[in-house]
Length: 175
Image 1 (cartoon, rainbow, N blue to C red):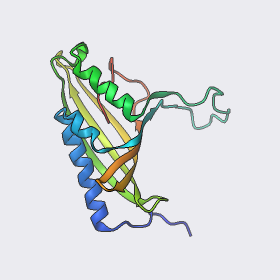
Image 2: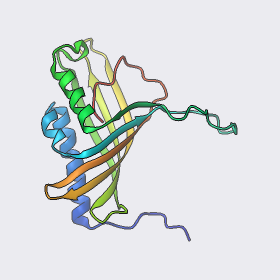
Image 3: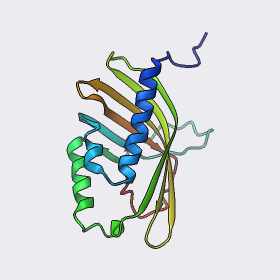
Image 4: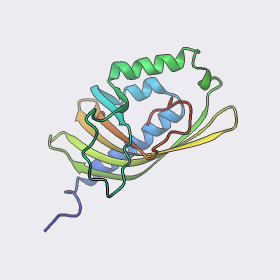
C-alpha cells in the first residue's frame, strides 16, 4: 500500500518551522535583508528553474540542453543581490515597491539527515510599483532546513514559479 502522507514530525518542529517561514516573509517584506541572511546556512542553495510546458501527449525526449535556471544562488551571490538593491542604482526599486508575501500550505516532513527537515510551502508575492502596476507571483517551494547551534537555518530552497511567461521586467524579490 502506498503511504499518502509523509512520516509526521514532532508538533514543536512543525510549529517552529512554520513560524520561521512567516518570520522570514515579514523580514523580506520590511526589506530587512541582513536579518534574513542570518536565517540562511553558510552553504545555502537558492534556485529557481525555468518552467517547461509540454502537451500531455508529447512523448518526445526532453531537450538535450537540460534545465535552464532563472537563478542558482549561493550565500555570496545572495549578498551581492542585496548589495545591488542597496546601491541606489536599481531604478525599478527606487522608490521601493510595496511588497507583501503570503505563505501557506506548509507541510513539514523528515529529511534523510536527523538534524534536517523538508518543508513544502506555497508563496504568493504581491508587488506594487510606482507606476501603479500590481504584479502577483505564485510559486511552490521545497526547502531543506537544518538545525544547528543557532537554531534552524535554511540550507536549500527550490522555487517552482507558477508562470510560464513572466509578465514583468524583473524579479528583484526574494521568494
